[in-house]
Amino acid sequence: MSTRRAEPHFFDHGAQYFTARTKPFQQFIQPFIEDGVIKAWPARYARFDDDKIVERKDWGNDEPRYVGMPGMNSFAKALSKQLNIKFNTKITSLEKYNKWRLKDAEGGIHEGFDWVVSTAPSPQTSALFPDFFQYSKDIQGIEMRACFSLMLGFDHGLNLNFDAAHIYNNDISWLAVNSNKPGRSNIFSLIAHSSEEFAERNLERDLLEIQEHLCGETGRIISCDVSIATFKTVHRWRYANNVERKIFPVFLDIDLHLAACGDWCLGGRVENAFVSAYNLYKKMKSSLDIT
Ligand SMILES: Cc1cc2nc3c(=O)[nH]c(=O)nc-3n(C[C@H](O)[C@H](O)[C@H](O)COP(=O)(O)OP(=O)(O)OC[C@H]3O[C@@H](n4cnc5c(N)ncnc54)[C@H](O)[C@@H]3O)c2cc1C
Image (tube, rainbow, N blue to C red; front, side, top):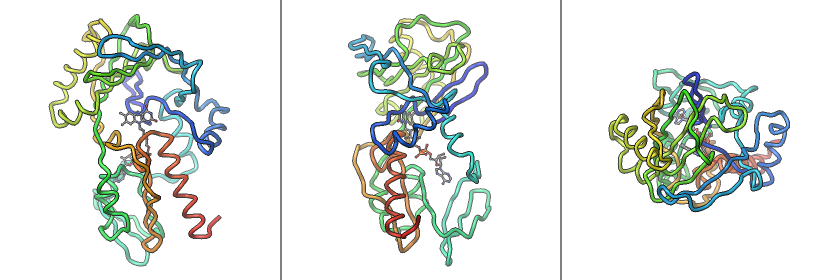
């Protein structure tokens, strides 16, 4: 749930919106809705087959699609207020003495932990956890796919008849007018996500070439030359989504005091990241008799 600042433009270049279909998640987000940290996005939605619109919907009359206010990262920021977080610290290995000791990429040591819970994507959790972790093999088998996110900022608005769109049969899979989400600055900004297939085929290709290709396809879909954008950049997400939408058991190793959770345990998406953590919390609570 990231927001990229490139003033005067702002882009939610990761998750675009989220749903709340489960009772625990609905209850969890309710106070944040009341505080204005989260708001439903009543977008004019379209579904494209390549460059043709084949369906339209008004999300104002449909299941709510929520966004953070004024950026997607606002929700995570609100959640992290009381937490002790170390940013920009890549953990590279774990070591067990009677407690857990973590080493980071700069050689720093973080120690004295009773438990380690990883919420990193499955390939990163797998790289970090020892082979004797009870669920090592399961996690190794959970593959994830990449996605490129194209961010375009303009000094004047484009006249589009949708705010959000899924695109089928194209190297672009998603288009959104970021600046039309609630609470955003009204300086026109557009987001395009590549399809997972395109991202996997072109994962290591030069980012400028990717940008040009995605700009060309975006322009063709919306019948407008987007090379006039005053700000253009591309971000590569290596682990954006699960290959398979499967439901895995809770990855809790009571003996080792190691656990893992994340959207990838339930097939991707923000709500599943929450549900996966919630399931782990419930299992830890019942197994360890904690309050
Ligand atoms: C392009 C894109 C579009 C998406 N669109 C949607 C959408 O529209 N709707 C929706 O519901 N979901 C969407 N998602 C999925 C959504 O973003 C995720 O479900 C959600 O962000 C998961 O949150 P998380 O905290 O579990 O994991 P993440 O957001 O993946 O966070 C994991 C964190 O672990 C860190 N990390 C990894 N390895 C290490 C290490 N060794 N040491 C320290 N830190 C480490 C990473 O840097 C990262 O910050 C999208 C994702 C992407 C990438």
